[in-house]
Image 1: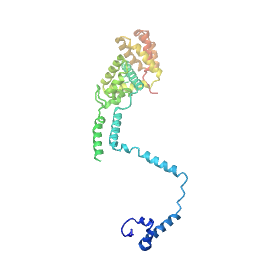
Image 2: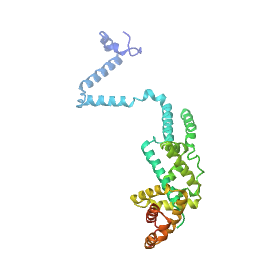
Image 3: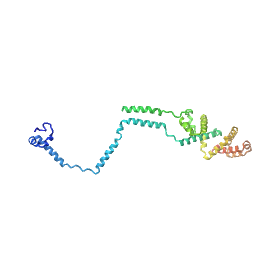
Length: 131
Length: 171
């Protein structure tokens, strides 16, 4: 058997049945297998941290929040056009002024009419001459 | 970046004419120095754009509308001094209690129904009466010379107008 490490091949071949004969003769492959065994033992000793209560719920909330934040992304190419439309609508609203208020306007023209009538009375009675 | 800049230019080009839209132009003369001599309600009418003024006047029946237009145009033809005098007299009238103002309007309706020559006589007599002290005025109104010039309705009219519009006196 040729040395899989020297040939630049796959070292996992060393884990296949029959490879131990080559490993007994090849120091390099023995080292590789020893290192692998050390890593396995270290992994066996590792204890993962217990999952916090509510971890799943918090995770899903974060995922949903992130999804909600990205709702506008499909519209992003249209943003300049939408901004321009918003400015135009605003300009038209501002230039057209407030909606007419029929009752208020009628009251106003009646007040103007009364003022003119009173002024006419004062003039007709000769009361606007300097005292 | 270039797209945004182009859009900004386009928006400014579209919005600029709206912002520069003229207001207040119409049948009336351009704004004068003495425009402040108008009573507030007339100043509002004066400051309206032609469209606003038309919309406001359209709310009146045609006959009343014509009267308003005629009276306003007559008022605007007055000299600045006359307009100032009218405004001062109007403010004095406005300061009266509402029932007194209403009484003045009612008496004026009777006055308006008189023939022009009688109105002129009453106008002159009212000018005299307003300058008398209250005691002198009552004495004069009871005099035979006064009774000989006016009928019952005219005497009552003059009495009321002189009371309502008596010249204010310093205490």
